[in-house]
Length: 104
Image (cartoon, rainbow, N blue to C red):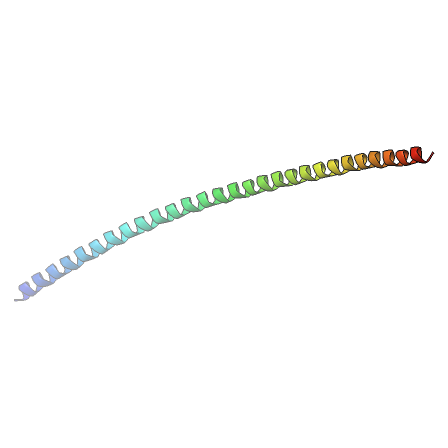
């Protein structure tokens, strides 16, 4: 009877060892999966950083180009304002001369 009890206890211990081994293997697989997920997350973070740098560069490029276009528009407006003023001055001068010629 005692031998039978020892045999039963031995089988129980073996079962517990197997269950524990299975739990350890499962935990190791879960750890590997977690490490893999961490690596994927780090890669995603690096990709996000690169995208952000690219977006910042593009923003700077577009802002610079917008400023250049605005400056070009302002220069064109100033040119046309000067040209229009010259023509107005010429027209006014001719009108003044015509008035003087008709008076005299």
